[in-house]
Image (tube, rainbow, N blue to C red; front, side, top):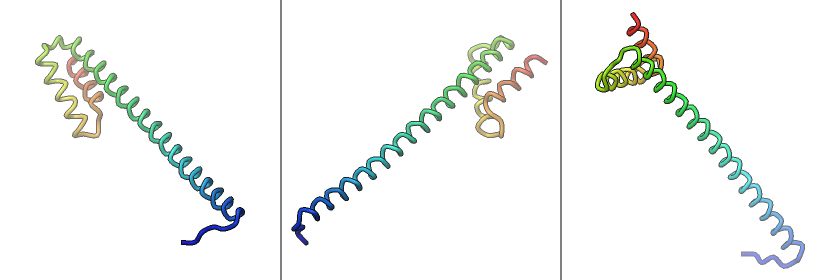
Length: 102
């Protein structure tokens, strides 16, 4: 291990260490900020999708006058379609509404 003898070398070493730590912590701050933004966007989209689905299924319930058990079955069917097809659960709910109007 080498001991830094001169004052100039010490100042350069401290400055280099400060710059490296600034760079490191700035990178962490930027990454954290990005993570927070992406999480907020994900949560907003999730809540919006859930609310739209619930609104759609409420419309189905109004039209069909389905019982609680029947609505539970329709909700499960719409969610299953949303999981297993290229359509969303909300889209499946719209089709259930369309069938109820027929």
